[in-house]
Length: 376
Ligand SMILES: [Zn+2]
Image 1 (cartoon, helix red, strand yellow):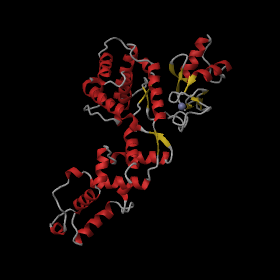
Image 2: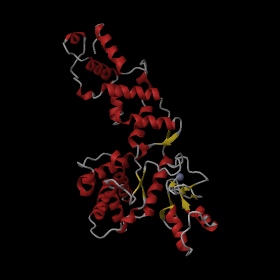
Image 3: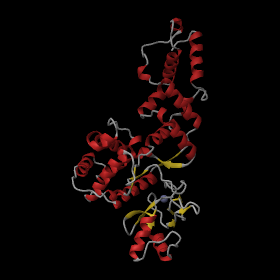
Image 4: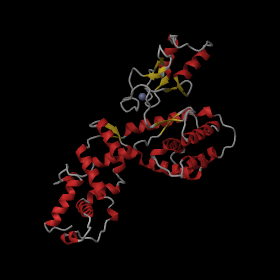
């Protein structure tokens, strides 16, 4: 359930406290005390006006904060509830109250790490200059929601296939460093110190050449994604999900511009340590960059010029302007794209292989094959 929601009439993203304060101001009365019920007329306005920040469902209700009667400490933050339900593809749909989907990025003033602060400063400058605003940030979320509805696929990947392919790729990798000229045969086993591991790698690489080529053509590198794909698979088996490859062009240009910003914009460069850009560790930067590109119709040059205007602004900036929720539409892109590629592997790639086999068995298989006079 969202901690903030979008007020259509005010064109603003607000948390419960901010919204109740605005009502109090509007009705010229003091702020509601914790125990005081929300007036009926406010409830009706909220119901009609406030929408989910991710799927735009209406019918919002407020769940107020609760605090311990003994210690007075806050137990649960206030949040918005949508009793009519979220859209099935809404990132909030399956989450417990108060938890935010991982793809949403709060550019809030409480941001602690250097990168979040640097990005929040950029967002505030953009708003101060009138180049960004909450309504435009909302329209990007809406664009993404529509994209999600327009391209879906069903998760049918067999977990056994997934683990086997990941093991084959890990064991045969990296194919390009293997001695292509080498024929592994019985004779080599007599070389003192000959490593059976190399024999196994070569055996797998030659046996599964087309499978490995299929993966590398699609830039699928499973090793860093295994636990993430496992999680997605467990949560979504047989379900219809968004096809992220529909956003490939946008993902590519966003990475391109984010890399440019992380190299050439000092505050971000410094925040990233040695200036190393990594998609996963740069969530706020990806969200901000995607926003610039969205506003520039995904044109890199236009977005770079928008960035230059924001970054070179020298006037004073109100840091509270950045209390908005951004979106990184490419959160988990690599894992989803890999999952989809895996379930599209032609079935003959698995023919005749024991999908339970892993490195240990392959090692003894290679040794037995060489001992019996085979070569590969
Ligand atoms: Zn929703």
